[in-house]
Length: 450
Image (tube, rainbow, N blue to C red; front, side, top):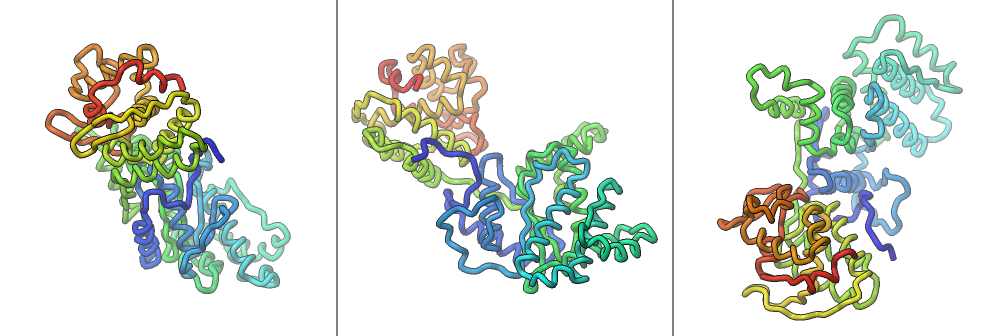
């Protein structure tokens, strides 16, 4: 049994988004290229996993290394689509990231052709023309800095290349050349190339801009669909910096809309990843804990923790952050020596819980998401009463609440406040701590320093 979860993308649909995944697949299948689609979500909300699930549902292929064991093949593979997977951040230090993308397309299409075409045909003029066309466009895109070699095929490719080097290629000619090369390289049933661009939002601003510009120049083709996985906020911030929009705005206004308009030119559809509700978040945490908490008395906490998260919306809508929380809870439970299991009345709608389970969850959440507060509790366990005071009245003007100054309250006397459901600095323990009313230093001590 593994004792913690990693952050690798997964084909497991932990938040039950299969309907959303089907929608994206349908959009890719039925759209008319050229087309740009943005799959938008905050960091950690599962964009790469969603992108991977779309890729797999369309093709039955797994692009990220060895295919996991026990995968169930999609009921119907879309043979009209040939997918390409490209991790943008790996190439962000290239002068022209579009060159790395074109090379990756050339490589992946070449491998696809090898698997689907008789070996004898690989030396044919069509295949050579496709290779040479990609080489020619790559040379143009790199400003002549990169001149790929055709190896054993060089002598046959020379005639094709020399014929087209007699005069400089114009922009439209280059696009036509690449479009025809892609058409020739596509499998017989396929009509479009679906290019999945992951982690655009993690690229340096200039690299993100250059990649988007390159895609618009070279891959705005009638057989190409480009699907970007991105945090739209981060990409827009990168564009503001790379395009120096603030210095160009003489009116001193908000320049976000300029970046958005630029992005909309690249992505005609920007689709937002669904945010999980309380029920889905609770189920996801429970599923994660079941996999990493070993057998023993500590497993008795799992049902009680789920009971708390079913009732109180205290988790962020962010799989990465919930994984981190699950890892922390598992570590605490493995080291815990004391199991008191005192029942306590909490609220009219949520009558009895095991108090230890609720306190364990409170400490784990504070540990993961509110470090300054946890450090105060670590130094003085009785400080938990001040945290409860903050939960009841989030007035950080009180000096005793100063460690909470970096937090955002999610509730006040009037009810819920508008906060980002994904961010970790949002304090989500108001309701639970108010219903617990009081936690003594003796009660919380067993969960500190675990």
